View 1 (tube, rainbow, N blue to C red):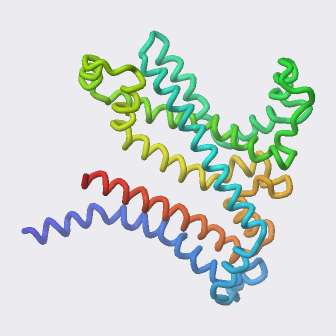
View 2 (view 1 turned 60 degrees about the vertical axis):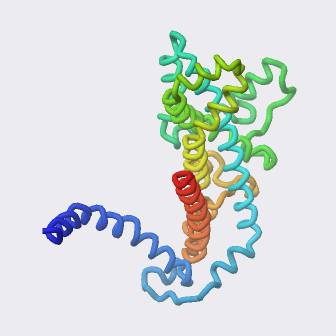
View 3 (view 1 turned 90 degrees about the vertical axis):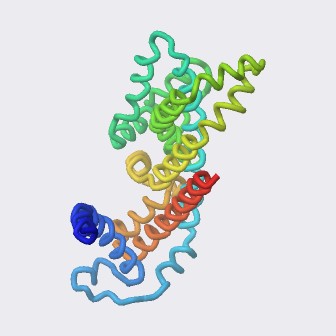
Length: 294
């Protein structure tokens, strides 16, 4: 009887296993195999590529563009996640005050998260234009700047232009998750703290932050993973330029594969990106398991 129940149980999970093997497992394994071959436009169709061992990885790691794209990816991710979290947390605390128009204003803030990323990228590309951009027009009108800033064409500013666009996209995601966490905190703990004479800052640092720690971990880790693998926003706004100043790992992998048609090198960069995210995910799972044990 127990064996029959087990077989029926396996039948229920069989579609999910097939789905994962076909749509996740096969592309992943194929990409790993591709990264060890000298696949390019000339031999891909004829399947005449050969295994070259770790040559693609050595060539990629020794490339200056790879080191620039790796550095840009970390700067882009850390800066975006930090500002998204801080602004999202402040907005979540603000809307947690539960004033009359809180729900309406929270809904308006969520609009930026609902817009497709490609549309957002085009909007910011237009707004951050040098002579005609609305951002420069506002800053010039207010006297904040004396001449237009080349947001996306100056190598020193371009990465920050893309980061600002991504912060605007990610703030609502942080805000809504943190708002949900704040609304679930027990009121009686705050009432007890008030009776003991705790002020607002003490309640925030000794009650809100510790109780909200699991939610904060989820927000930070999901934000890091989602931001680290960015492609569409950077590709539409700058295409990785100017002079590789906004090149990130995903756009570099795309350039190698579909501009230079060296699929082996592109697959190697994509696998390095995947490996970094896998390590981050394993650290996150380890932290969750540690919290459950405690």
